[in-house]
Length: 63
Image (cartoon, rainbow, N blue to C red; front, side, top):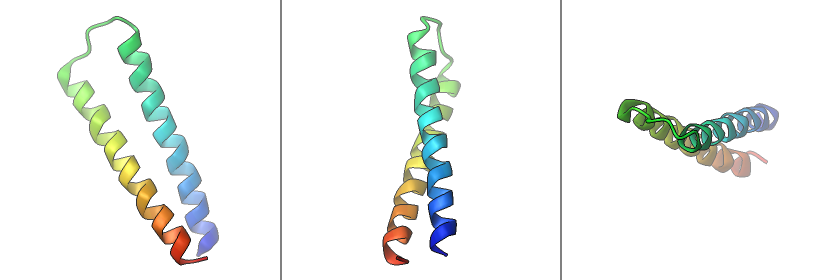
């Protein structure tokens, strides 16, 4: 169980990093970003953050 949680946590860290990276990339490009795209980035980043927090809780619980 612990190995599965660690693998999922690693994958979610990578996805969270990519989400934040692309958010900075799009905002730094100087192009106008549609509000729906910005809202989608917010939802994805928020969801991945919550997923990481849940997995961290489970990792501590199932040591």
